[in-house]
Image 1 (tube, rainbow, N blue to C red):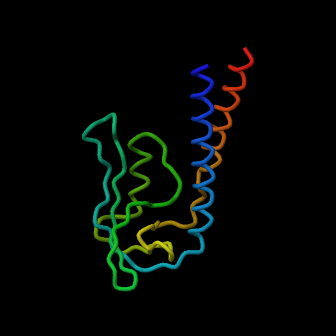
Image 2: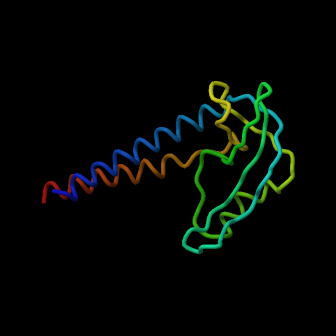
Length: 138
């Protein structure tokens, strides 16, 4: 019964995440933009089990300064090469177009045209629900 409950909760979390990603990807396509500057762009692989792309950029909205970290609302594949592809278009020191949420300017992306990977997370969430149903019936 513990596995059924865990599968239901995991499925709910992943379905919720997928719907949030879909919503944000659609919203950011209409966000205003400003020019910002990349302050950090690299792949952190000091700990091989925690390799991740690191992207930071600075931008201003209405005289307030913000620091962003998100390239898009899509994820990235595992592996150094995939992570390098995330940061490669944004070399440190370069000027970038920053799309920001007009209601919450601290939320931003650099690429508002990338399709989110929300379907991937939805499929995993539904898979957990199917697993829960299977476990409950057997």
